Structure formats: structure tokens, C-alpha cells
Image (cartoon, rainbow, N blue to C red; front, side, top):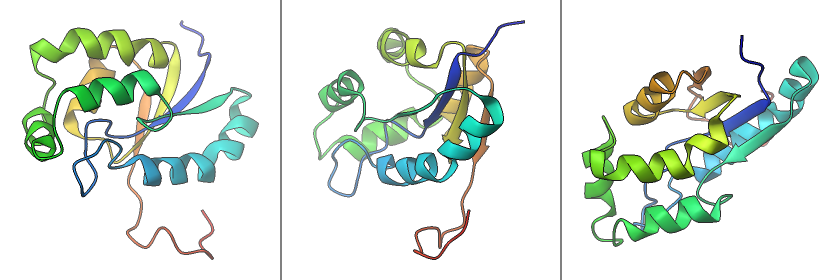
Length: 140
């Protein structure tokens, strides 16, 4: 049995924002992290971290290098189901070390991230949140 070293909250790292920049789901992923971090730490005794393009410079630089703002949506759509083989080495070099021996809490994960986690045998749960999730009075 592999002992977990921590918990990582992550989302769709290839999804662009409305202007074609990196980090399209970084804000709601960070919201989820802030909502569950304390409870996970108390329940598991493990450290909890956030893995997004905003929090990881190498991931951000790599994703930005793949596209221009004008081509960002097309790239994201082409990778939605599965990461192309020409991108696999970079994903394994940048993403895998951050997830190895960790439990992942995903924010509305796309199929390509689910497939990566399953192929790497990384345990995870994928969280879907109600659309009215940013109300100030919301109790998680």
C-alpha cells in the first residue's frame, strides 16, 4: 500500500479564460481549495495544496507556450478528451511530480485530467459545485 504524502486540489489546467489566457478555472479551483482545505487537513492530518497555472510558474509557462490567445480555445478543445502524444512528456515532467503519492480533489475535471489520474493510479474525487457557488453567505 502506498502512503499518501498529501492532498492536492486541481482543475482543468489547459482551459483558457475568456480572453485566451491561462488559468480559466484557477479562480473557482482556488475557491474550492479554500472551502475544503481546513476540513481535509483536520480529517486526514495531511497537508493540502493548490495546483493551478496561477500557483505553478512552470505549468503556466508551458501552457502559455502552447498557444496564442486566439488559438487557446481550439487547443483546449482538441485536448479535452485526451492529451496528444506530443504533449505527454511535458505533462509527465511538470504535472506528475506534483501529484505523485497524493490524493487529488478535482474541480469539475475534464476527461483528459481524469484519464491522466487513472493512468497514473492517483486516487481522486471530482467535485461538481452548484452554479450559485460564489455567494458570500454560502456554507460549504
